[in-house]
Image (cartoon, rainbow, N blue to C red; front, top):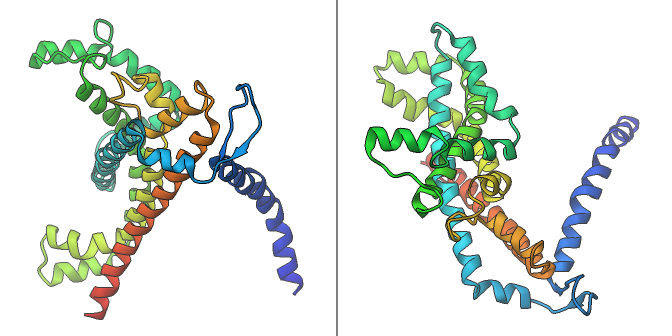
Length: 293
C-alpha cells in the first residue's frame, strides 16, 4: 500500500502537466468546435451551433483538397522514410571506413529546427539562386520551379521531409536491429534460407513492433506539418501544397474563424487515430491469424 502511494506521488507532477497541457486544451477545442466564435466580429460572444461546423467540412472543397494532398504527402514521405531508414540501418550494422563520421553527418538534420529546414531548402531550390534548379537544368534539361509547377512543389516538400526525418527512422531501426537475437538467423542459415527469405520470415516479423511504432510517430507528424511547408512553398503554387495543418492555420488566424478551425482540428485528430488503429488492427489480426493456422 505504501509503495503504491509513493508511486502515485512520483507520477503526480507528470499527470498534472499532461492534464493541464493535454486534456484541458483538448476539451477547450472540443467546446470551440461546436460553437461559432470570432473574437474580432461585431458580436464576439461564443454561440453554440451544434454540428454546423462539421457539416460545413463535408461540403468544403478547399478542406477536402487539402486533406487529400496531406494524405498523399504522408504516404510518399513516410513510406520512403521507412524503406530508406531500414536500408541505412543495415548499412550502419557493418564496418566501413568513415562510419562514425557518416553517422554523425547523417544524424545532423534531426537537430535542425523545422523552420530552419524549410528556409534552407528554399534557398537550395529557388530558381536563379539555389544550385538544385541550375543542376537539374544543366544535367537533365528540367526547368525546376516550385513557384510555377505544382508537381515540383509537392515533390520538393516530400524530399525535404525525407531528408529531415529519415535519420530518426534510421536510429530506431538501428537500435532494433542491434537488439535482435542471433539464434533465429543461425537456424535459418542451417535450414538453407537465402537473404530474401531470412528478411521476410525472420527479420521483418521481429522488427514489426519497431516499424509499427515508428510508422505511427511519423504518420502523426506528417499529418500535422506546418512550419517547414510554410517556409518552403507557403502552401503554393495556388493550393498545391496547402496541407491540412497549414489550411487550419489560415482559417484560424487570418480569417479568425475559431469554431470552424476547431472542428477541422478535431476531425483531423479523429482521422489520425482511426488510421493508426486500422493499421495496428490489420497487422495484429494478420499475426493472430498466422498463429492460429
